[in-house]
Image (cartoon, rainbow, N blue to C red; front, side, top):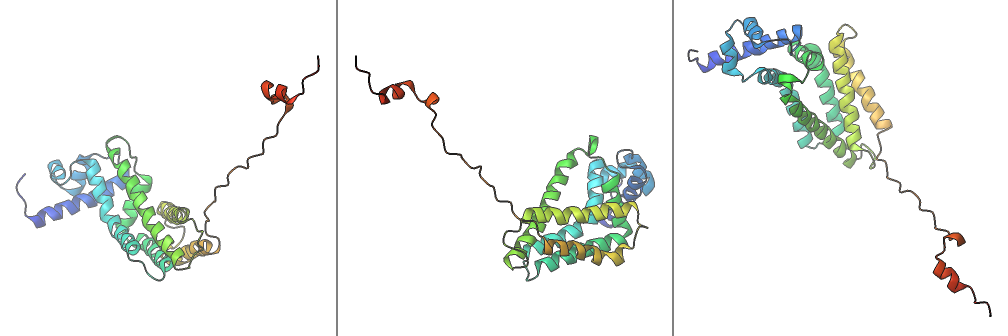
Length: 241
C-alpha cells in the first residue's frame, strides 16, 4: 500500500468508520465482513487493515467516535463537584437524549450497539471492555449522587449505587426503545419532561440503604432429657441403703 499523507489517512479512516456505521446497521455486525465495509467505503480491503487490526477494532473505533464526547462530559462532571449535582445529572441526561434525537450518526451507532451487535465470536474480546465502560459510567453517576447527598439534595441514607443503576438503566431504556421507533414521539421536545419525571421520582422516593437485620437468637432452655447424665446424677441425693 502506497504511503499516504496524514490528512489522506485521516480521511480514509473516517470513510471506513462511516461505511461501518451504514453496513453494520443494515446487516448486523456479525454478518458483515471487512471486505463489505471496504467496498462501501470505496477502498481496498488492505486499507481496512492499515487502520484497524480486525473487525472488533473497527467496531470499537466506530462506537468510540460517537460515545466518547458524552463519556467525557459525564467524567468531567463527576470529577468536578458543584453545588447542584442533581441539576448536573439532569442536564447531562437531557443533553444525551437531545444528541441522540438530532444526530444521525449517534442514532446509527446506538442502533447498532443496542440491536445489531452480539459480543460473541470475533467480538467476544469486547465483552469485558463493555463491562468496564458500564462500571465506569455507573461509578461516575454514583459520585454525583453521593455529592447530592453531601449537599443535602438527597437524604443521608440514600443508596447511591442503587440510585445510579436506576438513572443509568432508565436512560438506557429510553434510548434503546426510541431508536427502534423514532416516530413514537419527538425525543427532542420530550427529553426534558422524561428526565424531569425520572428525577422527580428520585427526589420524592430515593432508594434507601437496607440495614442488615441480624436474626434474633432465642435463649436456650434446659430440658431434663438433655441434661448430661453425670450432672443429673450429682444433683440427686443418694438413697440410704
